[in-house]
Image 1 (tube, rainbow, N blue to C red):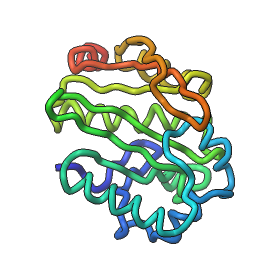
Image 2 (cartoon, one colour; image 1 turned 90 degrees about the horizontal axis):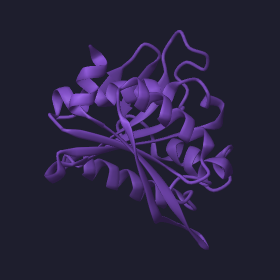
Image 3 (cartoon, one colour; image 1 turned 45 degrees about the vertical axis):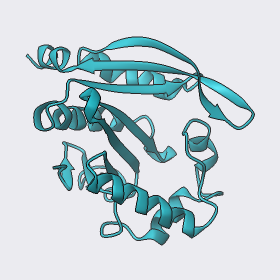
Length: 197
């Protein structure tokens, strides 16, 4: 149902599973103390992995979601003509709510890959998957209050695809000793088609 690999002009999105990335390699990017992890962890809803078993369990969950058709999760790699070609840039997903005929976008990128427009480029590919192949009606994206980089990226690609800002979900994301607001945006299939004309 989900493509195992998606190519864009500058990126390769490859299914995240043990067949495409070793547990130990993924652990090195997601572990406590990994380079850039402190800045990444500031605004993601998952905690850095404390042991390789955490990464093993994470991969089990991701593979199960793929098999159950609940979520398509990909490793993001720059393509051959990009700086850092073939390097692990981060992880992206499309979480499906079949009963709502909707999906949610997610992404985290390592800091060396920030500011390159990769978030918007993978969005275009995943919106095409959602609307043209999976026949969904709505795709959402969100950022936590204070995440200026994600806000800018999301506003840019939502505008390109004809979407809209829907508003704030107050006290939505528990993060250590606080609960943060979440800003939500959506693109409908009709908005997407109109923007593609």
